[in-house]
Length: 93
Length: 355
Image (tube, rainbow over all chains, first blue to last red; front, side, top):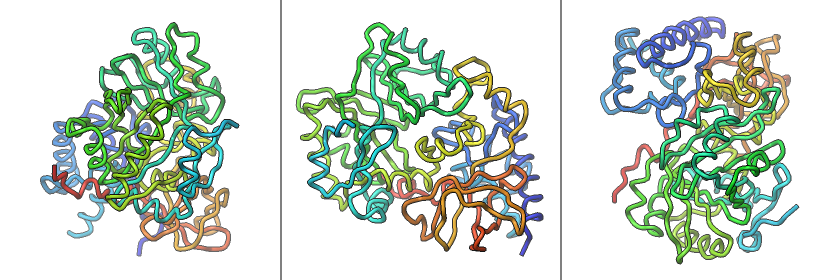
């Protein structure tokens, strides 16, 4: 089992990469540090619409090689749940 | 302290009362776990009348709100609800504020921990004080059935963070689709003259679906699990909007009350962040968190009910350690894990609306 240090390194890298990617893809008015990891992706929070969801799915696939199944919105509830999904999918490979 | 308009109604259902920022509220009905279960699996009804309620005239109101609120009130569209906060001059949280652009003006609902938000806006021409109205919160995956039974199918067109006026026994009921639990939810602002008959009507439908009335304690638990900010708990304990993760409520391009201090802290960089925690052992608010021997933060809010079978809460953690999926401990060496929010997939997302 990973120690906290190993988990932090891995998660911090994924978070930074994903934040940078989403800020660019969605033209968000934020810096990476502005995005709290529990921020909601739909509804309030980042308030993305259905077109933005497609951008997010494409970002995740191109940056991490992980595919979000069509119609599966569970990973997209918050930034953190999306990172959880990416980590879980990477661990499956 | 002024008694709630529906105090006797809730008392007859076994309510236990408490207080927040000088306002009376229902804490629970004797079983917080059952009340949280109703929120998550059927439907519940809570009285949020402790929140301030008032209406501002359209143009002047939006200008006044934009001057004070962290979000850009100018972008508020007709029929929509803006979720924002009000800070003091030191940039510390005072209130979470919801502004709904409705037919008769801007309905403002404020959950305040410092003084009266309404007093900030009384100078507006045609300010309408709704403190003699009741605010009811209907929450749960079956809440739409109750709303439909009372108001008809048209209410199902109300999308999240939208608002519309409806009628009950000839009186206007202001309806916001604004659940704060992660499940479907509606807020109803009802004049005092119809409050009891409206609450009875809702409870009739709530009971028919196996739900129940719920108090503030179940709502505290629901907000923690459902990833909704609670100004009365972590808001009061932490006070700084950025550490609380409220950046999404801020327009960094405009000035507002407290913006200078908030922008300065943004420039300086965050030192700590609020994250959710769970444990198999009871959590204690104010307790320190440790990564082996290093103190990395402290618990700032504890859920009054277990969430997904675990003791749960929120902790303010040093940014270098503020990540989900880590293992910490308290001073008694009880194991505590940081987790992502929302902590579960809401039933409302899983169940089809079989209209």
